[in-house]
Amino acid sequence: MTTKVIYFSASKGFILFSALSLAYVALLAMFNPQAVMDLVGVKLTNTDALSSIRGIYGGVGITIVVLLIYLAFFRTVKGLSFLVLFWGSYAASRIITWFADGALGEFGTNWLVIESIMCVIGLVLLALKSKIMDH
Image (tube, rainbow, N blue to C red; front, side, top):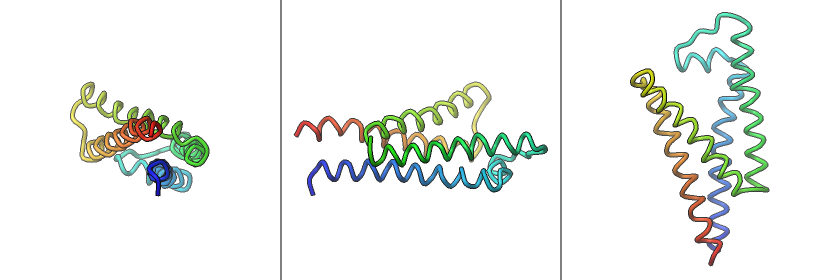
């Protein structure tokens, strides 16, 4: 296998792993929005709340999943760039919460670590691109 094949396989794998992770939450939100909010201890007490979680985590999540699948196969580097922004924005939001509102709980802390690692993986893959493509 050439270095380029390995690089693009790893990049596509990272994008598809991200898509699969997001698909799980999106589908859970579509079929059981309360289950998503139970992860953070929030009760949805009316249909507007239920539809909002279905829309944000479900509908938007499915849209992002479809986009990621397309990017993985047809615009891999753009997919990596998108994921760096995506995972980095999630991590930044948690850091802002930490400073603005106080320490995160176990859920938020775990996800801050996961989102930060995902962002760094994307950054490393993007950084490797120029080295691999120049050879």
